[in-house]
Image 1 (tube, rainbow, N blue to C red):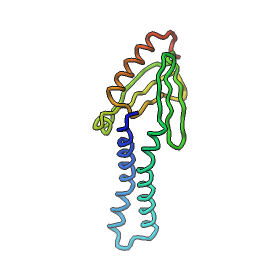
Image 2 (cartoon, rainbow, N blue to C red):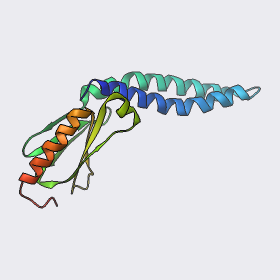
Image 3 (cartoon, rainbow, N blue to C red):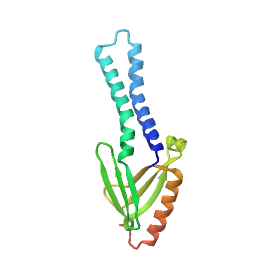
Image 4 (spheres, rainbow, N blue to C red):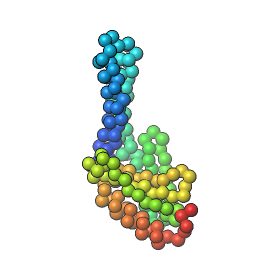
Amino acid sequence: MSPKSVLLWTMQAAVFWLVLFVPQLIVFLLVNEPPTWELALMIATLVVGVLHTAVEPSWRYRVHRWETTPDAVYTLSGWLNQEWRVAPVSRIQTIDTKRGPFQQMLGLATVTVTTASAAGPVEIEGLDHEVAQQLVVELTNTTQATPGDAT
């Protein structure tokens, strides 16, 4: 993981909580005598949002890990519920890269490894864009050289 992924996750969390908080603030300011439950809800949203934005990104950074070998792709992700995933190279069907606006701004990317697994694709988030490109090339070459039908 790139250390810049902490900033990415902080930005994502801040946007999420701002989308929830700003409408509450607008309604609170427009109402002549807002009820106390409205103020309590607004304060709760602000407190939880600030705590989440301050704690979650660095916690995720400490937990998230990934590794590739000639046999498999390994990922560990999550911050409350942690998930360890292993995708055998012989089961890989596609390898994709995605970059949202924040990722582009920070020079980051996410690599998605799709297999025939019912658990869904394996995602490696928070990679430097160059590392992601190298990983896609490496996995593509390894997958092509590995016998199997990816099913």
